[in-house]
Length: 342
Image (cartoon, rainbow, N blue to C red; front, side, top):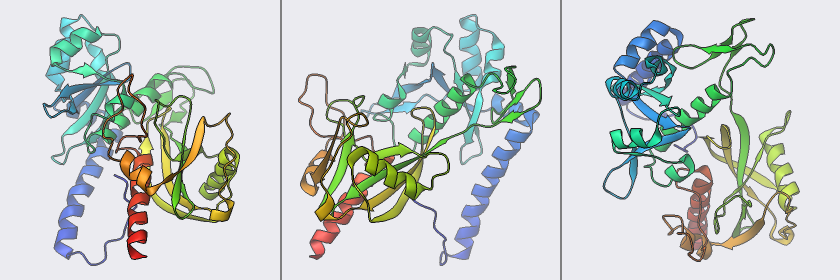
């Protein structure tokens, strides 16, 4: 999920061909569904559908202390719509989010106008806020649910053209919206964000915002301003928020992140001189920022679930699906290797 792109030079040719052909086939199939409304409508009839209720995904317990997204079929959804007296055309508002390795199309649908408790009882699941869901889902499932929520939110907030004020209409796949007045085509957008883990050679820097749950710390992040490069954004954010000037930057990996609306997170590591590591925290931006040792980071990585209400808030990190967590784990592994080599 977080690995940067790499060119495979020495893999066996037959293995490359076999893997590539399956991937290419799925990507071309998805592209066809985005461009052909009739094909997409036909695929919906046999698709897997993931339900949301006001942007919260429907999850089902799997008996192992975690949850999994409820995977429904078209007849499942039609049945509940009929039982609750909903307009059957609601199903047409399903949005394409992907397809399985078996080339079964995957859609998402928000049923926020239906009675929440009835839908939960019907499918033996629970609609859970996505931020909480990230701690309950397996790593392979979180990106699909995140993509679904991001696309549903975009459709809900893009119903009118920003140029004319006239309604926009979606294609069958939900991959674009078109102004009914002048034909302007709108596509889902993501906001670029740099998230960076800073090190002074022995410690790493983490911060928290007032909106974070007690005890939660993560890598620092900021939105790119118009005209900035990633490096310029990173340097500006660290200067503004903690008063540091970095002297080296390296790219780690990237991730789509559905919060606050839909962000493209670019993860980096940065270094500062130990002689110039004193923090000057801007408390209008951050509630707190501190340096943490490898021992503190190692202990916090053992915390697998958020502390319960009323518990003493020990240090803990974002869910393992989050790029912030990945950067912290990556730094800790590098630090251990560095110290073992001394």
